[in-house]
Length: 254
Image 1 (cartoon, helix red, strand yellow):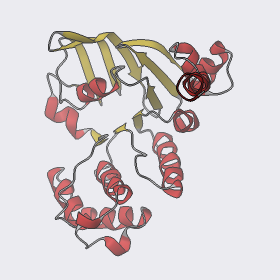
Image 2: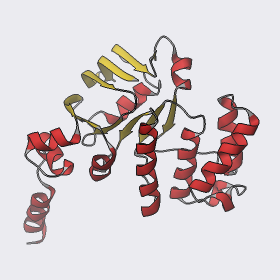
Image 3: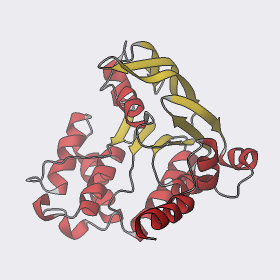
């Protein structure tokens, strides 16, 4: 359902992605993890069609993003890392706008809108302008918009930003439920414990290169670690955060 094939990208003459290849199958949740500047955002821009690779192919929902961009975009729902809403709209108005762009029948659109807003605890705010909404409330509306047209692929860039503890649990359960009915989820996040709990596949990127692509269990076992966070630190050769803090305390405050 998602295929990135030998992709290279350079921005302003600086190489960003180096021969990146991976696949995510139907009914899978793939976690995409890496340090800041690793190339995660660039990859997400490729998958959403916001960026064209210098070389290589990107397929989403079986559609080539370069050759069939409109058909490819019909097949995914997207939650961006820094989402922007039309805040003068109410949640109902915003979802109506999104649903009509996808050509949803009005009765189905109204039914799904009401169900999604109830699920996210926004039923009472359905007809309030979003100008005064918290970050978490806006994130819930973005998640609802991504799910609204029932796409076969979900592209999620830091989807837990601003969410409270209960909403985080809802997202985790929702992603697993989506996978169980055959949807494909591509989930980019810095929250490795969250990825570990939901992902069937973990893709580790650093400096624009794929370092590992395997199940969380296999990655942890190969690294000799008990958590994905510890395995990630070992794989990407990042110094342990505890050691870094101890060094800071000694150098700056000791």
